[in-house]
Length: 132
Image (cartoon, rainbow, N blue to C red; front, side):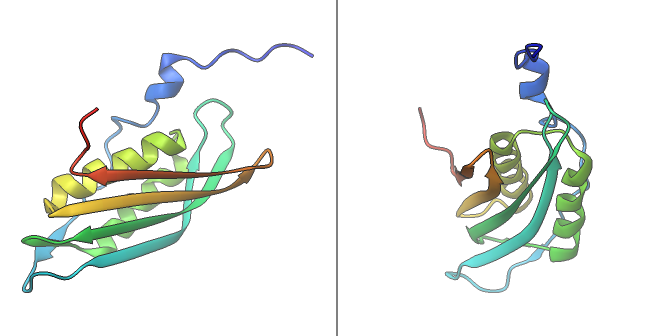
């Protein structure tokens, strides 16, 4: 059986800087409450194999002055459907884009991805970022 090409920097960067639909916001009227949004039909493309990836994305955040507008969030996440991006990059990119749009007190984005090759993957990213 022929050996498959190794992962490349191009694979690793896939989808990280692609322009996606804007995430809109609306002015928050209250303080001290948390919002959880679950998207059970997340889909993207593996940048190496070209095969589809499926999972559930959960966004949990403490709003400050702005809240996520759900229709624009849906269009933003639908844009991943044809995007070649690794799980880890997708979760981190979603967190960065949500944080940039809303400037929350804190936010957590979790991706639970369907089983592939007998393994199930969960990726979690937090804002503000922990210093390494």
